[in-house]
Every structure is written in structure tokens, then in C-alpha cells.
Image 1: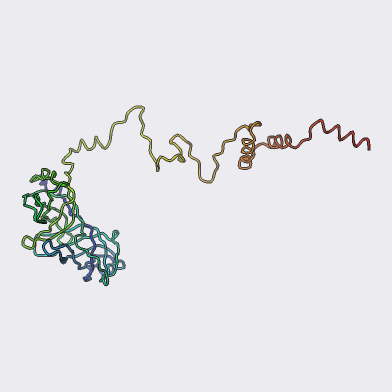
Image 2 (image 1 turned 180 degrees about the vertical axis):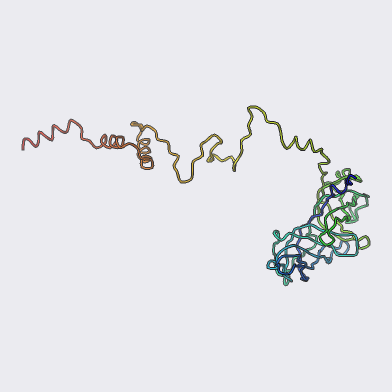
Length: 322
């Protein structure tokens, strides 16, 4: 019996995020006996602003990473973390699986007065499952409608060791920047969307995101087309040359220039020009780097230091008289 198509190719529409987190508690790690690596878990909060009161709202979240206990996060410290979020539509806190290589310490929690609300950026792929417009109530002067889009994300959950799906609600503002994107959201369409986490629907157990940008995915392409695009047929007389660190500088050698090994000179000896003193000095200096035949050196030296034939008889005559 042929396998089901869904088992051959699992759907993956992850929900990524980058945000500052205040570590409130270090949970017991899950480490195999005799090893220093394993699953490290922590408790923290995700902050966003209450649209009605303007106050900070801290929502409990769990942080998890595979790493070493020597590089574990510390309590009462603020870190900037990057990873993916699993926010099941259930009465459980969202789980943030972050990357240890991208961990960036910010400061101590004590005395840190800057608000962390609405600083959790997010982006990811998802499938549109519903959409609806509502009047914007952020201010009394607003006259446009916002688009509320529910998008389903699918990702692998480390805790359950299975693929899970969850829904996130995105608010697309009907302002001048995003109003023309309303038509892109069609039920069943795959989109790439980015924004920041701005709230949580307690009744539906759903994250709420304010959208900043949206684009459509590339869609489906056949395997034969992908192979043809990746392996173009060679064209006679048109060979693509490899580029090694080409920034368009005048000091760099061209593709056809010979490569000079490090520590050697690329000086080319030229015939000295007698009527050009500058060229003669350059030639004499270059001969010290690249030794030449001794006849050429003596020729230039004797030409400048030998006495003229007219002075020799005069000296002989004076000495003979004495």
C-alpha cells in the first residue's frame, strides 16, 4: 500500500520571534546522567501594552534550549533571545525554543527601568483560515477599518515530539501603509507575515500580533523545473568566472592578472631611460630588489664618475712639468 501524501511531506509553517526576556526562575534541566548537555528550561514573562489603560501586561512564558549547563541563563538577568514559539490554543503558557548561539545578555533585572512591552518581534509562514474587518478604535479621529486575520502555524514540538498546529490572530491596520494588502489575504493562501506581539486573547487562548509587513510565498514548483533552474545548460563561449572577494577596488587584480604569491615581488625590469633621471633612479632602486647582471650596474656607475678624456692629458702634462 502506498504511503499517504501527508506522511511523505510534513507541513512546516513556523512562528519565529526575537525579544528581550527577564529570567524569573530557573527550572530543573533534563540531562542524561553523565552528560553536561541537555534541555535547559526557564520561566520568564512576555510583556505588551494594554490598549485601554496603557499599562504593561506581563504574560508567563516558558523558555527552553538544548545546551550546556555551563552557559545556562541566570535568574534576575535580562537576555535578548531568538528562536521559535509554540503557542497552543490551550490554557498553557507559550513555549519559546531559543537558540543558545544567539543569546545576548542585556542587564540585571534590578534597577532596569526601560519597559520591555511590545518589543517581541515575530515573523513566520502560515495559512490564512479566516478574516474579518472591524472599525479601528485606537483613537476618536480614526475613520478606517482594520483587518483581523487568523493564520494557522504548524511546527515540531520538542516536548510532545510531534507536529502541532496553533492559530495566531494578526491585526492588519487599514492605514495608508497596509490598506492595499487586504486583498492578499485569501482563505487557504500561504503568506509570510511579520510584526510584533501586542496582546493575548484569554478566551480563545490566542496570541495577538500587530502586522508590519506581509508578502506571498513563492508557491508550488515542480521538481523538474527546480532541477532545470539549478543546473542550467552550458553555453558555448560564455564561461562564468568565479569571483573571490570582488569589491570593485582599483587595487585589486583582474581575473586575467597572474596571482603573485605572498612574500614575493611583482616588479618587472625595464630598460633604463638615460634622458629621464626619475626613470633612472627608479631603475637603480629596483635593481636592489631584483639583482641584475653586474655589467649593467658598472655601466651606469662609470658613466657618471669617469673623468672626461679632455681632463686626462691636462693632468699628465701638469705632472710632467713638475
